[in-house]
Length: 200
Image (cartoon, rainbow, N blue to C red; front, side, top):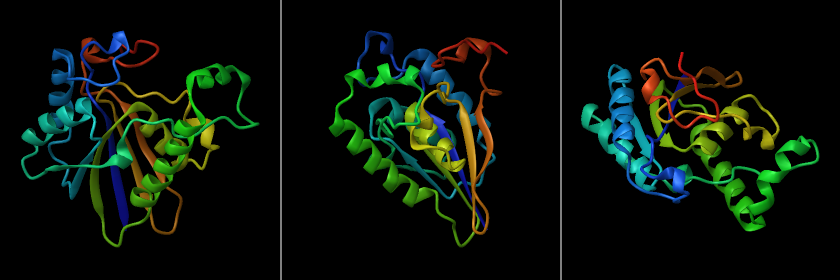
């Protein structure tokens, strides 16, 4: 039996460039959410979960309006966080990122992600399709975990706003990354949130 996790980063946040910690979707973010909803319209979802933050909740609302059999349940396990801290095997080039991060933030993020993996990265007794609407770092941590990579390896794994990542969790074998940051549903002008533009 397989558990399919459809991980979607929230749509573009209005005024995100000003460093606001949360806020509503921009008009472009609304269009992104509608596009990913159309993309996933044929998936037989069993459940949907969303980060409680506003930008994720608004994305979830737009998506579930177009997926009427679904209602997204808020989960603190999908909050934006620092999934793991530095370790001795981490490249030095990443160290500067942690200059403004407190030990408490790292501890909280590590605990959150451990609970998230226990919740969703475990096999199901029957085939399931679950939608998780969350944040860039959280999705990166799921991808690193699927590969059994070092905890710090979430760094440098990036997702566009409303990009699609699918992980298959199996009973007797390791998880499989079916697709990562798929942007086929987004035209070039809606591909935001990445450190390097991806127009193609």
